[in-house]
Image 1: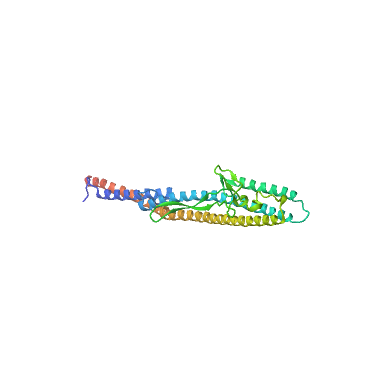
Image 2: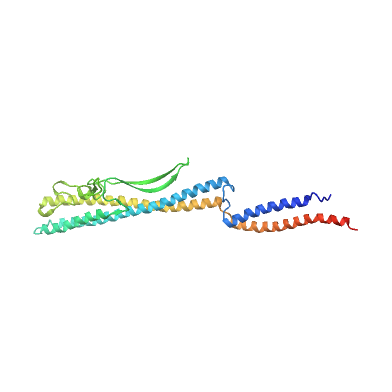
Length: 302
């Protein structure tokens, strides 16, 4: 039955066209944005996961920056400790030279005094971003990671390094409460019996037994400084490994988020072409359905 009031064919064709237009709009949005899930309404679960992981990735980026800053602090301290080892080795050589008979100890002491001042200069200048890791008696820390546990709680992990200003510790000098170098503490500053400390000893009037004790003091200092340099080197290696891990982890998160929300451009391109063809056919079908009512007029022609 043909009705001029209710065109069922046109209604059906119109519904089909609306459906195709909706799918076409969705596909065009995916092609233009590159996202399969761009908003919460596209897929609430995937959008929530992706948003959280993107936030965590920004935190990891900050951790990477902090690791770079920490690496600079440790490298500065290591360079200072390494240079100090060379200077103390020179002091050791001068003391050994003083054991020879007929040697002017006063002149040797003049050279040692210059080396002692160089040690103080190294300790004073070994600061990066306001932190000195070769002078002091506190705990230093470097940000190492950003962690989200199974309960969703987040925390920032740090690597600790305790500055010990004893004679067998890991700093050249201690530090006063006002932030000044304390030349009477630390590996270089702590006194060792009658010969004093590496920083304060004066061999001008040393007896042979005093020279031997001075050599023992210097050797103990070199051992402690070598141990401290080794600790700093270990932390530097750990920071390098952590930087590499954070970089890999960030890439993995980006890749994982992409799997959840990125559009498959090959698939969407093919779908777009198919929907555009379907749209043209639906429009033609609607046109045919609308024109069917016109055919009723032929029934009333003579």
